[in-house]
Structures are given as C-alpha cells and as structure tokens.
Picture 1 (cartoon, rainbow, N blue to C red):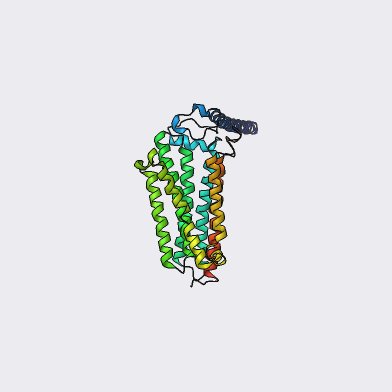
Picture 2 (picture 1 turned 60 degrees about the horizontal axis):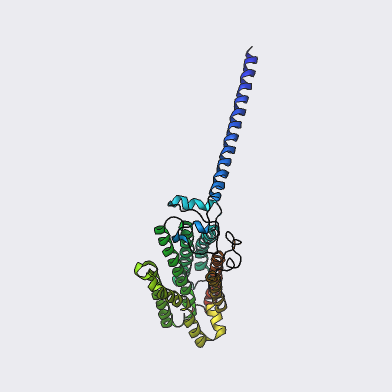
Length: 323
C-alpha cells in the first residue's frame, strides 16, 4: 500500500510540474503576443504629414511614418523600440555616440604609453575631439527622439542639436591646429581663440531667443558658415608656411579636406531634400536626406580621427615633439 501511495504521489507531482511548465509557457507566449500586438498598434498609429501640427512640419517630401505627439518623455523614448521615420536618425547618432565614447576611452589607454614624448597636451586635444563628437551625436539622438514630445521640448531639443554641431566643429579643429601649428605657438593660439569665440557666438545665437527670431535668420546662418569655414584660413596659411607635403605630415591635410567634403556633401543633400524630393514616399523610413547626412557626419568624424592619429604619430616619431 505504501509503495502504491508513493507512486501515486510521484505521478501527481509530475502532473503538477507539467501543468506549471505549461502555464509558464502559456504565460510567456501571451506576453510575447502582447508585446507584438503593442508594436503593431504603435506602428499602426503612425501618422501622415497632413496630420502633423504646424510646429512639427519640416520636410514636406517625407509623407508618412511620423509618430503622434507624445507629450511624454517615456513615450518618446519608447519609440526607439519600433520603426518610424526618425528611427534611423536616432540610432545612427546614438550608436555613433557610444562608439566614440568607448573609442575615446580605449585611445586614452594607448596615447600616453605609445610614445615617451606624449604629453598631457596630446590627451587634451584628443579629449576635445572625442567630447565634441560624443556631445554632437548624443545631443542629436536626443533631439530626434524627443522631437514629437511638445513644441517646448522640441525647441529645447533643437537648441541641443545646434549646440552639438558647435561642439563637434570646435572639438575637431583643436587637434588639427595643435599639430599643424605646433612650431608656431602664437599662430596656434590666435586660430584656436578665434574658433572658440566663433563657437561661443554660434552657441549664443542657438540658445538666446532674441537671436532665434526670423529677422536674425541670416545672421545665424552667417555665424555657422563662419564657424564651419574658419578652418580654411589656417590651412591656407599653413600651406604658405610649410608647403603641401609638410602640411600633409603635420596636419594630415588630405584627411582634413576629406572630412570637410563629407560634411559639405551631406549638408548639400540635406538642404536639397534629395532623394525624397524626386521620389516621394520611397524614402520615408529608409534613406532620406537627413538620414544620409547623419551617416556622413559619423563617417566624417571617423575620418578626422584617423587623420589626427596619423598627425599624432608623425609628431612623436619624425618630429620627436620638437621643432
């Protein structure tokens, strides 16, 4: 009788375990189905250009794929989990920011031990570049994630976006001018000071409401053009002092020019609204001009980093950190 009872208990326990496993499996299935349904609903709730409020209308050639107004930080950030017409803009710069953050941390462990002549100045100029890149890409990703929140938050995010551009431009010039004019300290200081002041000016016109009014639109544009092209003067000056070959060694001139060309080409596509201008609806989710511009920004920053690494090597090998 005892053996029979024990066998019955064992069967009951197995049955209970089986029922428990079945229930857990059913619960997981229900959770997955619910999550899939939530994503489908979110995608189904995407709206068209004609449904957008005035404050969100930017590119009339992007017809579909817009998120509804969220009025919620959590709601806006949750949109990272499903596909819409800002997904590529967000993730391209979010992943870029993470890559440059870890890249900067890694290079920090490489720069100092690479050459005995490496100094705190080398670390500082590279830190300026990485800080500018991470700030630009991170602020851009934040803006694109929150641009459907509300008019006030979108305006704040737009200011962040422009500030990030300033950080990247100024941060990129610092190592280029440091290595390019290492043997002409006064010139280096003059050019760096000029670019920093222009950067501060661009920051002011980005944040101060007085300068964000329509009558200052031309002034704002001129400020950013001046900042973006301010590197042309020191490059020309360097060519007259050193010649092309030596500037290539000291500043990685060809890589600096390539990185500038990438920015300009990407910005040109963005301003022209191409290819979506020629193929409405085709590039609403993938491949719009703004997305292409984002990828060119990341590629240009990576190109500039490679050029500065070459300049760093030349500075500490051939030059030996000496003039």
